[in-house]
Length: 56
Image 1 (cartoon, rainbow, N blue to C red):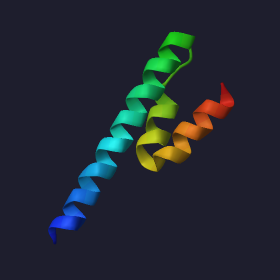
Image 2 (cartoon, rainbow, N blue to C red):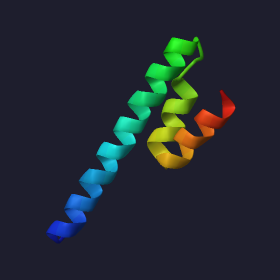
Image 3 (cartoon, helix red, strand yellow):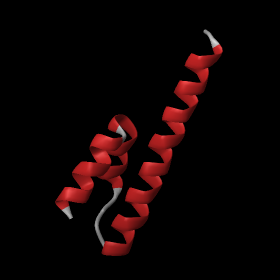
């Protein structure tokens, strides 16, 4: 695996984790169960975060 691919995969994983942390904090603050949104955001990244944002 070349270095660019590794950097891309690490950056993508970090972005998914950061988005998931944001969704979890916001859902907890609003009294919403964050579990389904955690899973969706971890798997889809921006799509899950946007879906959460639109649903609240």
